[in-house]
Length: 203
Image 1 (spheres, helix red, strand yellow):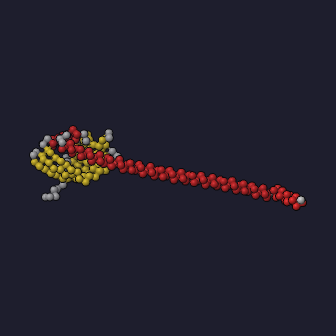
Image 2 (cartoon, helix red, strand yellow):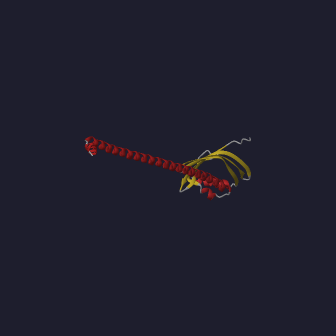
Image 3 (cartoon, rainbow, N blue to C red):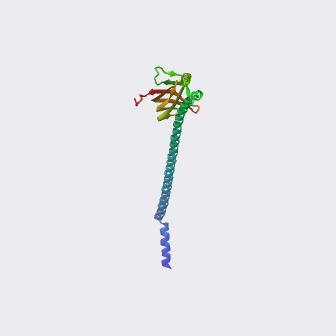
């Protein structure tokens, strides 16, 4: 009995000892600090994962935008080549109105053998019309076209080969050319042409 009483008193002394309260306080304080560290770590990890997710989304978005831009540019390049081909087709069929629909009002041209600059849409259309009425029959082929698009301005370089008859006499020519196009109201219009004859390699 006395032994049990002494044990209870010893436990009471231990619990009442200031060092026990200090120990408990330190444990509680360390627990709070540990909790803060855990919370801070989780917050940091969440932020990192969020940033990684955003970066991944941005990368995918930018890749999609770049792919769309490339696709759009390729479509514009084809549109320019098709416009030039249609201009030639209009000449072959004598459709001067269709040809004129592709020519910009401020059109200029250095012809194959021209010593002066042809200026204006009216001068270009009249020149083509007079040539057709000689009469002239011609078929033109485009070789090695290279198109560059910069916004609403583009240029195409190419070699051409044509053959036909003019005033009843056969002819065939080949040369190199640069044409400049501008896009207005959703349509590509030819605003400049520069043509250079090449010597016949067969001669």
